[in-house]
Image (cartoon, rainbow, N blue to C red):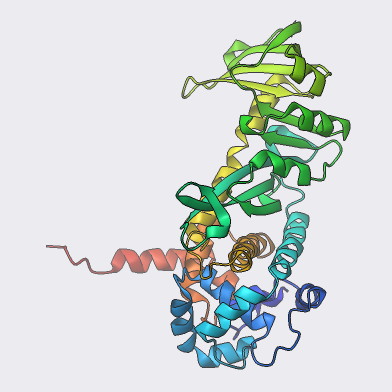
Length: 393
């Protein structure tokens, strides 16, 4: 029986049981996070910031006010002193953000092992990843170090999403001025895996290095691609396919950067009628599978939408690079923790629904499984149905 099923413990405590405190301590010790700390440890900081993420807090003052209302509950979670706004702000500014990055990556490793059996688009046996970038706008006066445009600052999240479970397995946080294509240099290519990208990542030199590392890519082609066709294959027009070709690049620079053959697949979406052209270095997959793989790119867009909608990464509690990265990585750990809870506890609702319920019940003493059981949900719906309406005449 999972520890999270024990009676008489806060839901917050049950969530914390889903990861190893030993692994957390290793991340803290790696960067000496608790060195010369007397009253407010890294564990206290993480619990306060995780609480802020899971309950949609808007500011450090908001976090302080809410936690001050739960002194006995905080004691049982291991926070022996009060959480003060100034202390939390100071911890976010000074304690190395890499503590939280390493810990989030530890949770990511745990989640990926749980979801390893999940199907990949097109029923691939190999791993599939989507790489994309989202921009988080900031105020130039408060975040001058992250200048993006003349009158705006921003940070970018460069994310590699594992399609098995939609778990982010690589995240790089950079200033807004850093072009997303540079983040490709930080990826460690897994031989035989598929990497799906939008056309903003077209760089034939980098794509050829990915090919040399024995990885496969599916990327949307730009409209001005200069090429010649060396072979054409028959396609099924009923499935939206228009062409399946082997091509060679013709431009002097692009031909030098990518001297090998490429596969070009032309496809028309049935619903929108939009014409899409894909490039790949894989010549064995069916053309329809290439198109299906590219459709899965929207999973990373959904991830960006999810964390922006449900977590706190658009309003920051501090203005330094360290504080911003601390908040982002703890937000990522909150997302992955919900994904772990959903899989380990076999919760039926979506991750968004799970987080909404958790935001109201963190200090309830109810087993998480019971909260999300079909009986509880039916009872909730019954209560809602039987409740009086203010406008029932």
